[in-house]
Image (tube, rainbow, N blue to C red):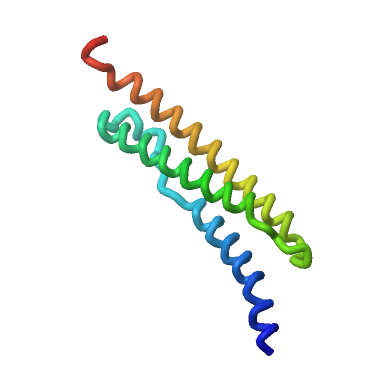
Length: 114
């Protein structure tokens, strides 16, 4: 009886990891139309938030990629790959958003020495 309870916990842990990785893809976004009305401080803060999100997503992607999926878990490797690809796509979207914000900041916030 004890074997059944301990054997059931690894699939639960793997499923929980995938659910947590999936939930991490929800984040706040900044509307590109609002970039021109944002102050330099707000632009800097938004760029910092996106950089933090990129780092967190990369850490999650690394954890998922390094997860050992048991052979008996059918489709586990495929799910692992799909989650890693989704995180990579999210990182790409965040980088594009960060570039747009950086461009808006470059247009609006020039340093006094230039």
